Amino acid sequence: MRFRLELRKAAVVAAAALVSPGALAAGFDGKSNLVCAATDVVACAERLGCMEDRASTFELPDFMYVDFKGKVVHARSADAKSKVESAFRSLDTSERSLVIQGIEKHQGWTLSVDRGSGRMTTSVSGGPVSYMIFGVCTAI
Image 1 (cartoon, rainbow, N blue to C red):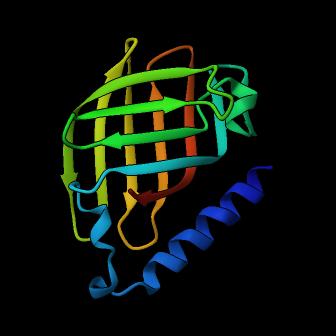
Image 2 (cartoon, rainbow, N blue to C red; image 1 turned 90 degrees about the vertical axis):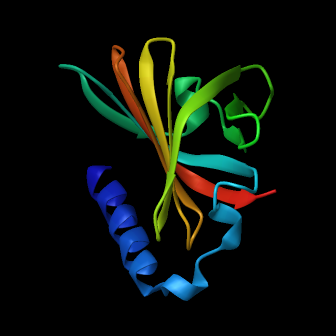
């Protein structure tokens, strides 16, 4: 399981290195709203170790909608049973990344999008379980 995750991350890093700065998508500039889908999640609890599976296994939202004008991320599960809304406190862009950060229910979160590929990594930490959520985003 860990090897498979490391292999996926290495492939994403290698693919991102091939993208030239001129090919970066304008939609990942912090102006166009985004919809992001979670594909894989790693959840870790202190002294219990880590587990990898789908977002629904951990009762986490499958989709995140980033509203830049409203400065809020709306998250929900595919069946719409789980809904969360969280204002973000910071937004930064670099040549390769779009990074959004906030706090929800005493936990810090960071959503990072590769501006070339749309690949997304979201981390949630500060509670009894920490999450790394991997997926992909597209501008809407």
